[in-house]
Length: 376
Ligand code: SF4
Image (cartoon, rainbow, N blue to C red; front, side, top):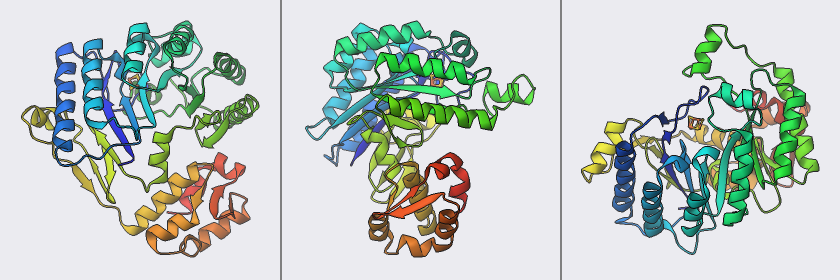
């Protein structure tokens, strides 16, 4: 397998915009049961296979929210079943308020070499509005502590298009973040999902949709500031300094590499088959505590769907979609399958086709979904 993902669905509280599979306000006993279930899943799955990943990503939720003894239990199991000399990247996600020096040292001791911190905003008002529990001062402190603990590969997740945010506050935030020295930045526009508190506020008129033009201006500003600061954009939302691209995420975007997902609702792609774990606690945790693997839901893509997926995901990356890889996988030429769409997109200056890759132009990247629709 190329990558291993482990899902830890606990957070101190649910953020107001969050639509991820995560729970706030859980008891320690529930977290203990969950970690025990994850350990069982690792044990049962590795009984017949000795396959080790190149990348490991513990995400959530907020994995750093686990109490130290549970985090240690989880990391020990990962080390026992999956860590090998083949491992090149080991990431964990955390929030500033649930990380501290001891936890950072614990992570380093277990070989975690990449830290992804949920910063989201530099403004106290925005952080409060989002339902986050930290301040930017805590980000500064935890970044220094992470460096001290030996982390050299640190990502910040940031959001733009927030209620009340303008271009100048976004610029100021980017300046403050760049001054700290993270090696990777993931920048996402706030997307208000129906099932969240923000979704309800939108329906009730307490929030309004963010202006598209302003969001575009923020995207462009970020791109130019980050490029000037020595970052390169390698995926629509992701920027890295040289040698700091996230290897794990590239496995998902390439769509041809295998990954195994463990934990509640985690997705896997192995031997051309997609599957996912149950999203309900009783369907995931209970069977595992009884030594039974939970029933995975299998999903088979048609050839047409698999082709479209390879295009969507590939176009998100600056590298683009490899014509050779497409042909090797589907035994058909990409340019003949999508002749009409490619001609139209080239005419509109949305796509380029050269050096064996199909790529979005700058204009195409900004339009994103409009381009993808052509390939459906
Ligand atoms: S910390 Fe992340 S996963 Fe947890 S509630 Fe907030 S946005 Fe969702």
